Image (cartoon, rainbow, N blue to C red; front, side, top):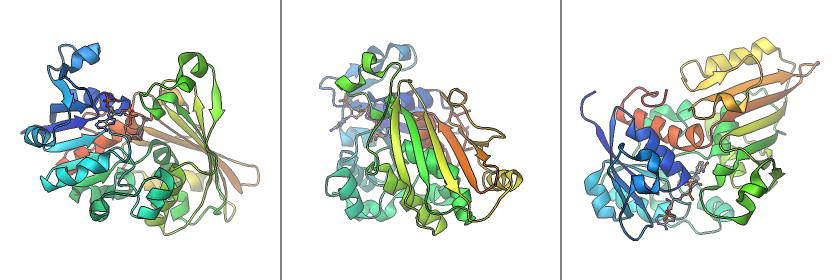
Length: 340
Ligand SMILES: NC(=O)c1ccc[n+]([C@@H]2O[C@H](COP(=O)([O-])OP(=O)(O)OC[C@H]3O[C@@H](n4cnc5c(N)ncnc54)[C@H](OP(=O)(O)O)[C@@H]3O)[C@@H](O)[C@H]2O)c1
């Protein structure tokens, strides 16, 4: 490896920011040079997170864009949506490569953004530059881009499972999706509902019909396949620390076989090191702590309906790992560098 890329993480105290620090500190092609949060006084990162003691001497400090741009060439934004777009224009003006983990640059349509994120978009000028950072679908565009809109965690699990079948015109438009997410999907903020006593051994559904990831799935599938689907999506919170498990119910446009469906997944993902098409149904624990997306399916007796299941780690393939995968592609490194 020649020169190491200098990287900054904005929002380094959050769940995805911490995971990025973990991955990037041991990545052979990067040097972590700047960390920020809203902290008022610069504080050693290893004081906030003792597991990084002897791994980094960096301090976490209040975001200073000028300082950040001097320190790094690739900037990861692990910030809440509506916050990222305050900083992205300045970073792009300084010719930085930007990988935004928030939803701020995932939609081209500002009306859709406003409908689901309840705020007018403040940087429509840079929206056309953004590439949706799902490498399995958009690798060539990612390689040339300076602004990556890293996908949402639920959409990553859902789009990877559906894309090949929708592209082949094999599934009816009525699709039902039932996803379960670890509580870390909601970020580090303190909320009574997320206290241990409420989370442990618990499960509940939330935001049926109106979750902001429904339009993200529809928009990306429309862009990548030309087909419009409007899935019925119900997310759930489960009392585990990490992981997303999506169960997807589809009806085929014609009768299929196991071999045909397996063959389609193998064909579409043959060059995708992080997608594993399984002979059976996936299990959450097999992907937790990894950048893999495991996909499996079962057909009914008539071979007309299927249950497809897809699992990822929400903080890795659903966020920080995918962001590093995108960085690897931008830097011309092997996609798996620092991730396997
Ligand atoms: N969690 C997931 O599984 C997941 C998956 C995919 C995508 N995402 C997306 O990734 C982003 C980060 O998520 P997360 O779960 O890591 O969130 P989080 O745990 O809530 O962390 C947010 C980070 O942003 C900082 N921050 C908040 N407001 C700020 C402001 N106005 N100015 C500067 N810094 C600010 C926080 O700093 P303080 O220390 O000052 O609070 C913290 O470091 C979100 O947009 C989320 O939707 C999350």
